[in-house]
Length: 345
Image 1 (spheres, rainbow, N blue to C red):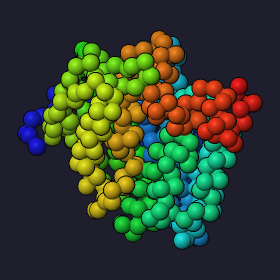
Image 2: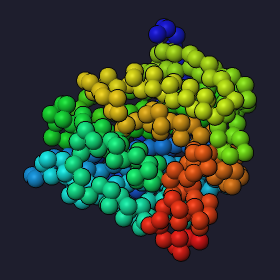
Image 3: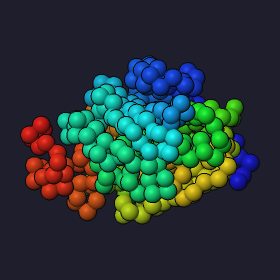
Image 4: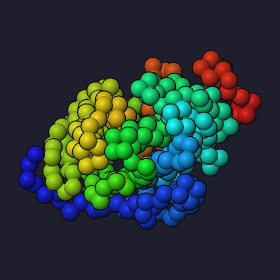
């Protein structure tokens, strides 16, 4: 780590005023509280959080995520809220995707289908050492659901480590441009400690060097340096290079993992390899956010091209990884046979 001080990095604003310990009020706040962005011209924010609260016969859980963007001069708010009830043995008695759910692909991200699939995948399942394998995108069929349920898993682990009756955490990630560079900045807090942490990644020349190919996958037309700051202290400078999407994604994920490793000790005593998914810095979440932020800031007046860039995240070797990446009736029938194609096509 160097002793370099961050160059006047701006701090983002949380969606919630304070920790909210009432599950019903938390759902209402996640849905409706007004937000502030560091970039009022093209806001691209993600707010997220988790509440795990012990009850007389188990646990009540809320996991939520709210994505903000401006597309074609209209602000959009994509919400994912999942509620759960667990018994004392961590067996899921009930799980539901809130009806406010909105995915980035409109009707393809069908609430009824994803809710039924979520219930089928997780009802009666015990949150144990095998749970991580059950919540991959192949099972839940939506990246937003994977991220929210992953955050719930990590918070249950932290609750156990700290022997707490309740745990609330929330986070914000925001972004703004400085010339041709992009600053992605965030903050996170948890109810069991008075400390919070701030982080920032300064991606120099992002708007010149990050591009998307014919399939929507991210690549770099030239190497670009990235500076990482934790709590205003400069911890790392590295250069991201590679015209192949796989190499760029891997380097960015490694960078996010390094930053995440500096954030975790503020909140957890120990961590397994899948832990602390309750963070926008978790590598799989961060690469998705980077694609969203860059595409929406560069092409916010071209909704079709933004969706093209998002598709690059959602498909692998021309196969849809989530329901929102389906391109035809034939694909829907082949890869998601229980999806009601008549509801969309």
